[in-house]
Image (cartoon, rainbow, N blue to C red; front, side, top):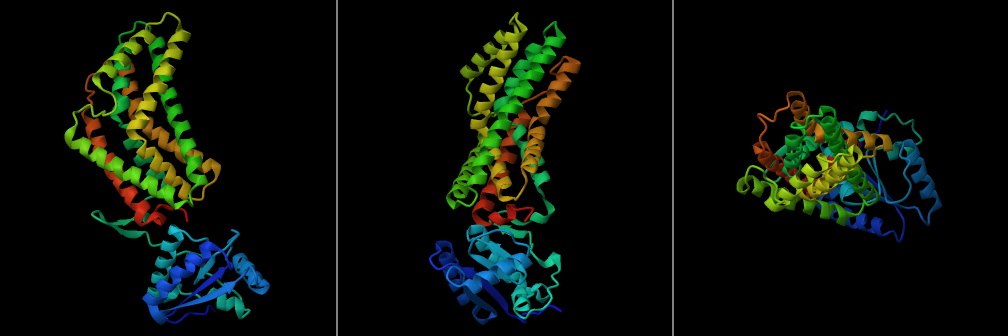
Length: 379
């Protein structure tokens, strides 16, 4: 039978003497001690100089199926945490609150091990998961109702309605549907779409690599959050102030130059040269688009980096993002190639992409600052 810590939560900290992160966590515990008084008990084990404490820590890691190395190592109930940063800080606070409110989850696993008792841990209680949180101005949101696939689809879809690339596709289609050689027109259009997707794919993998390598660097998360909030302000402002075409990066003169390049590339007698021209156009246009909407793919890769995924899972989520990012282009291209018309196509919908994109950036930016652990969907 499990030992209950009656109306008191025990927090066990395994630390190393001289470890700066351990020192930061101990300072944090001083504040918690003042806040909760005798309702929370803090128990410390130094492991770098004390061999017995080190053996106990390794035993506990094994019992709790925590294979990560290093200190600080914290145990609260049957929950364990490695390291100390903003995310762990938040998780420790929320776990203590949950265990004080729910005696069923308040299992003192360390006491059981020290008493040489058989450990029978309900796996559903290993991690406290309360996805409900409050964001200023936005109210309560339940993260348990969302997931990485949904996040991939929603952000990818909104990012796809970027006005800085849509006008290029419409210019291209206006020329392609007038070409006599329909097979050539189809191939050039497909090339543009594939090249556009490839540029975005490479960009996102590059950002993901940076985000993963620096996921524990608080300043990077702060910088990304600031980019998100600035992007939110720019996009929401653009919704109320910009015209229907919505692109704030490319002016009328630049658009005219792009239109002339499209006509030049598509009229090339050599099919190979035309393909090369279209690829060059797609690369340059999507680099411009990244300047317009880098906030969304940047935020998405930051969210992915928070979650412990395999390389294949990272690739699948980015692939899902890219699929929905390209979905509106694929639909518009397909309709144009089948009907050979651009009727019913308007850029007005891109105006609303600013508003939706701005709201998403605002939400994620605030989460990165106030509740970053909410973005850890699989932990």
